[in-house]
Length: 138
Image (cartoon, rainbow, N blue to C red; front, side, top):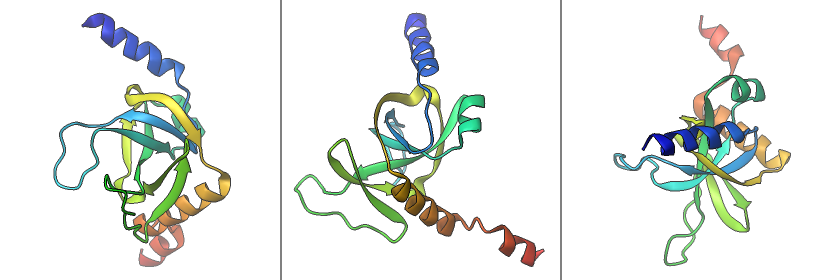
């Protein structure tokens, strides 16, 4: 048991996640309702200095673009379609998480700057990161 924990820590130390990279993640097993669960790809959105300093990273989960019967899933206004490792999916900007790096497994790919710009635009609209609007309300 202790050896497994040491191996997890050692593998987490070897992974150096960067903004825009996609990793396989050992997500939570216990969830409620529509919360994301199970193993899945995740997109790193935290900044490099945070990724290097912290034991945690900020991520957005990805989900398949098609259900098990092959039908296309709805893409909501806050989601962005992506293709990673030859699989189509979508980034779920409404399910932002901070996770321990130990949850990360192998790197699956990296999204291009144009796609990352669109994802960050959707995220900013979703969580209202507009300092000028905050100042106006003060």
